[in-house]
View (cartoon, one colour):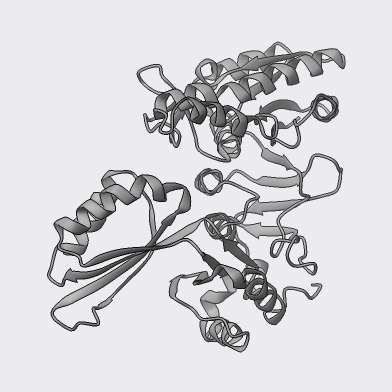
Length: 408
């Protein structure tokens, strides 16, 4: 008998019929002799509906109240799923974040999990029930409801699996696994049977929508095997697990793109020690994440420098006022913004042992007439910032030229 955590996303619980399907899947797993813990997201579209209501009341709603509102979507899904399991002849009990208890820090709308108390889950399982846990939510030390950010139910699922020592965490979604790139823009994309935590972590951070990045971080830290599979099929999906020798043989595993990037260019900043630290320190204090950074001498050549970096488009409106304020403090000549960009990336463990991968990527993009405005690398990924209009062309060209369309 195994202890299995099954997480179902918004599309999987998007209607009453689909919730009934989830109930049947959970009961089928339990019928095999396994103990089952279910994590559910809000019904598809529900979180957006709730947040829209908040923005109709005020243009800048307080983050604490946003979490109170947004968390109700998962509460509804958990109760409906428990009821559906009961209706199908099973036993189930819904549990909310504060009941489990999922303790987080106090960073509203993007909280991080500190600890999970598993006793409530175990007591539910001992009673022969399926534990249905509301994803995406937790509670901070002051007792306030918090949420874990977009895709946070993935994080809940993997974190709960780690906390209770589950044998596996199954992530059920509307796709049947992790693909070499987005099938909607590249018809030759292939499902990957097995991928390492490291590669999945990079793909998740670079725009792949299958798993939230923090869920992969937790899985890698606690060695939780993740099985990404479809809610609407019994087919084997993609296993995300620790790396092995066979995974290192593939130079490039996948191509990702991220349209949620905005470029900020601050020109004419005084070029002296401490200036860049002051700039990015001020940004960090506002809890804004910065990605690609480029510093270069200003065209004026008068001991000034230009600094460009990217932030999430969703953070840009909030970031603009204090970016401009700190830029004035630093004596910058101008601040410019560009939202018509995309970050295109390649990822693969094999890059560690194969030279010339970056040069090949740049050559492929150049052959398509695509100009690169910024580059960032890690041991197993290369990212390029290009104009948004070239997204599909860049992804298809890289996918084809790195042999990802070929069957292996």
